[in-house]
Length: 147
Figure 1 (cartoon, rainbow, N blue to C red):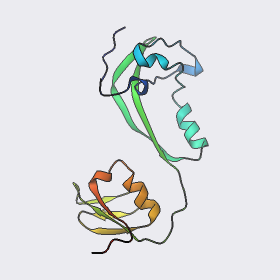
Figure 2 (cartoon, one colour):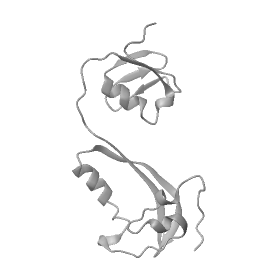
Figure 3 (cartoon, one colour):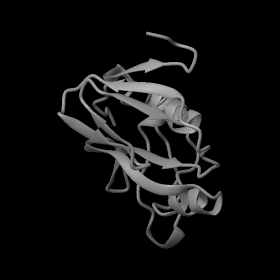
Figure 4 (tube, rainbow, N blue to C red):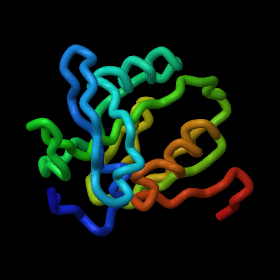
């Protein structure tokens, strides 16, 4: 087996496949992917994330390309995303400015960001946005910043 791999990605994170009715199939993957000994049934990670109290669990990536094939099942890269609910302070003294490309954006917490407008956020929402995947589309100003 000589799978076509994306060399910019770690093969350990390119492995996932669907197991029917909890059946186990021995994995014998090449290279660094050989470290993978078990791939859980398709729904197990979703259920584990929900049991851990995470919410808004969703697929952020499901690659169209198969990286390996085991017993006729294509292994694809999958990325699940969820968030941990928590206390959201009412005090909004952190500023985020949306830089674009859209005219307006609304986040998961209901905050609306017009392009170029200053939006006051609580520290929870500000940190989630600053550490998120869209952080490069914002300018973040701490509470002690003065114009």
